[in-house]
Every structure is written in C-alpha cells, then in structure tokens.
Image (tube, rainbow, N blue to C red):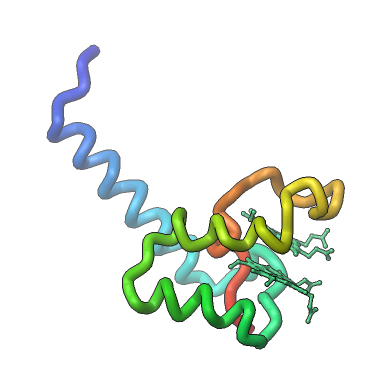
Amino acid sequence: MKFSGKDLAFAAAAVAVLVVVVLGTGKKLGPDVPDDNDHQAFFSQLAQGGKRVEVEKGCRSCHPMAELPEAHPHKEECMVCHQPG
Ligand code: HEC
Ligand code: HEC
C-alpha cells in the first residue's frame, strides 16, 4: 500500500493531537528543572520560537546522556519530560 501526501498529513495531524492530549493531562513525565538562569534560558528560547529539538541539544553540555541515571529513559526529547517548575 502506498501512502499519499494526504495520508501523511493525516498521520501527522493525528500525532500532533495525541501529543497535545498527552501534554495537556498535566501528568509529570519527569522532575521539573531547577528555577535558575541556566535552565530558564532554554525555556525562554522556546517561548521566543526556538525549535525544541535544537534548543534542548544544549542540555547535554551539562547533562551528558552518559551521566544520567542508569534507569533514565533513553530519549533525547529532554524538554518534553522536564518542564520549568
Ligand atoms: C549550564 C549547565 C546546565 C545546563 C545547560 C542544563 N542544566 Fe540541568 N542542571 C544543572 C545543574 C548544575 C543541576 C543541579 C542544580 C540544582 O539541583 O539546583 C541541574 C539540574 C537539573 C534537573 C533536576 C535534577 C533533579 O535532581 O531534580 C533537571 C531535570 C535538569 N537539570 C534538566 C535539564 C534540561 C532538560 C536542560 C536543557 C533544557 C538542562 N538541564 C540544562 C546544570 C545545567
Ligand atoms: C521520557 C521522559 C524523559 C526524557 C525524554 C528525558 N528525561 Fe530526564 N528524567 C526523566 C525521569 C522520569 C527522571 C527521574 C528518573 C530517576 O530519578 O531515576 C529524570 C531525571 C533526570 C535528571 C535528574 C537525574 C538525577 O541525577 O537525579 C536529569 C538531570 C535529567 N533527567 C536530564 C535529562 C536530559 C538532559 C534529557 C535529554 C537528553 C532528559 N532528561 C530526557 C524523564 C525524562
């Protein structure tokens, strides 16, 4: 079966709705980041229209994946789970 552009647009819209619903439940996916300048700077970049995937790369300069706890999710979307407190 081939996917047309329309199918892809529909799938993308469905995913977007799902993300909004999941985030909208207010369920905490991880601990909040500390309320300090190092962390707030990232979230104000987001507020100013920065792309999350680009912005959150900066997290790793202080929190390399290798230094996160053993049980930490192996996911790179830091800012999805960690919100400002
Ligand atoms: C300039 C270095 C630096 C950067 C950049 C940085 N952090 Fe941190 N982060 C720290 C330090 C230091 C602490 C511990 C300080 C504290 O607990 O107040 C910390 C604590 C945290 C904590 C809390 C840990 C806990 O035990 O509750 C989380 C979550 C976190 N950072 C996530 C992030 C995320 C997500 C980003 C990117 C948006 C980020 N950090 C960027 C230095 C940094
Ligand atoms: C799928 C959700 C999720 C994603 C994505 C995620 N985290 Fe976490 N993070 C958590 C959870 C849950 C904890 C608490 C785990 C624990 O205490 O063992 C945590 C804990 C932390 C802590 C505290 C570690 C400590 O020593 O107590 C830091 C720092 C952190 N994450 C940074 C990051 C960074 C940086 C990224 C992106 C590279 C990231 N997280 C991506 C869910 C996530």
